[in-house]
Image 1 (tube, rainbow, N blue to C red):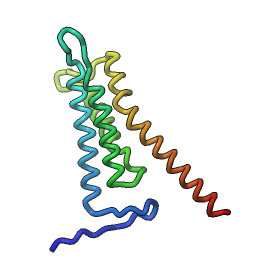
Image 2: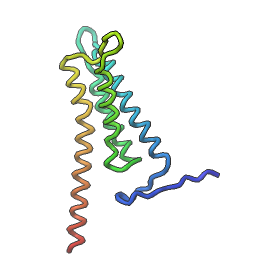
Image 3: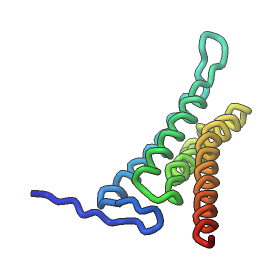
Image 4: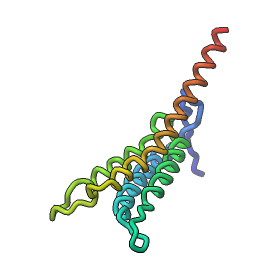
Length: 144
């Protein structure tokens, strides 16, 4: 019989198993992979019109990755899939052996960078503000 040893995080009171760091590592790799695929599909066209649907897909994917990371780790480490995405984006900016670069100098590149990170960053910011407000109200009620 296999037993899973659970550790308890003192700051949040949630239980952390030995599998949680593995899951977090997979989520970080998914963030990296999402960045590479977003860059590769950025110059897609719908007919004759440029249609960068990868920006929307990257935004949703990063938000889902951050929400999934919050379920297996502490709130401070939930941004690690975004770090994986940024590393993947930076790797795509480096030129290859023949001088080929995946990231073009166009407005779509900037839109991809901002559009893919902003929703997850706003979500993490709202979570942090709510957590601070909860801690503040708990400290106020403890003093009374």
